Structure formats: structure tokens, C-alpha cells
Amino acid sequence: MFCKHCGHQAAEDSVFCPNCGKRLDSAQEVPPSQPGSYPNYTPITPPPTSGYQPTGGYYTPKNTPNFGGYSMRWYKFLIYFALFASCVLNALSGLGLVTGLIYGDGRELVYLVFGGLRIVDLIIGIAMIALAVFDIVVRQRLAHFQRSGPRSLLMLYAASTVVSLLYLLLATAIVGDWFLSSDTINQYATNTILSVVMILVNNLYFKKRASLFVN
Image (cartoon, rainbow, N blue to C red; front, side):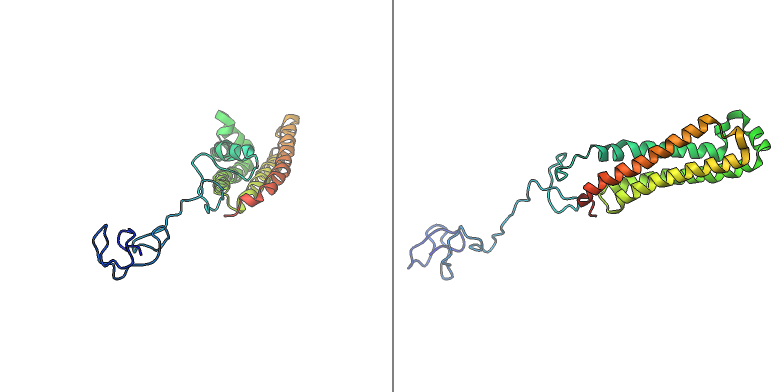
């Protein structure tokens, strides 16, 4: 038999444990190596050292995430630089429109000649500041692997394109040919094409990695 107190093996007819000296009346016939042999025994299971899951179901060593074999360089570029940079640019552009600073010292003259442009600048400026806030919202959703993250990114690109084209149409309607120069048309056309390309490319990119965004 084995002592239930210290686990030492004793003779079958022993009354006291030869090791710890305690009474063996309730000694158990279970070898001490098995769980449950001792009253205070608690099995300890170490956490797995690998197996990344965005939901946090597995332990992942620090700075060694495994993204299921997918390359995540573009994803990291988005959450660590691109969306922050977009936020700053949208915020600065929005403030420039709201305050009229985009016209420099001639803003009073511009608004005097084209009175309706002031209202357009205010509306578009507020919209661009809202886009700056949305940049951070999208960044957080992507960083936390939320299901809505990729979809929100596509919405951000689409909203930016709509706001840009809306400003072009409204400003042209008020200012006319003075605003709608060939350089302006080329700039807005290029930005629109780039936005459409980014929507298509990111849609394909995140579709392949949809299994990672489960939160």
C-alpha cells in the first residue's frame, strides 16, 4: 500500500508509515504517480506554445504571430502607417477647407466673388474631418481582426472617392472654368482611378484572409 500523506510505499500490514510516521488506516492503493493520489494534487497543463488565433484561444509567444501562412505585409503597412497618414491628410485638408486657409491670404476675395463656395468648403471640410475619424475607426477594426474591418476599409476608399468627386462637381458649378482646369481634371481622374484599383485589390487581398477576421 502507499501512504496517502507522503506517497511512500509501506508493507500491507503496516499501521504507521515508516517514512512520515502517520497512521495508514485510510491508506490508498493508488500509486502516487497517478493524479488524485494526494488530496492537494492539482494537475497543471502548460499552455501551447504556438497556434495563433485572433480570438485569443491559443497562447502566442510575443512578437511571433503566425497568420496561417499568409503574408501580412500590406496589412501591417495599413494599420501602422497608411491609415494614420490618411487620417492626418484628411484632417489637415478638412481644416483647410473649413477655415478657408487653402486660399491663403486671398480667401476673403475668393468668398466675396464666389459666395456659394464658402458653404461648399464647409460641407466638404466637415466631411473630410469625418473621414479622418473613420480612418482611425477602420484601423482599430483591422488591428483587432474584427469581421467588419476589411469591409470598413473598402467603405473608406469609396467614401473618400465620393467626397472628392462631390467637391469637384459643386465647386465647378459655382466657380466654373476657373476651377475646372486640365490639371484639376487630371488630378481628380487619377485619384478616382487609384481609389477604384485600391478597392478591387484590397477586396481580393482580404477575401483570402477572411478566416483571420473572426472577432
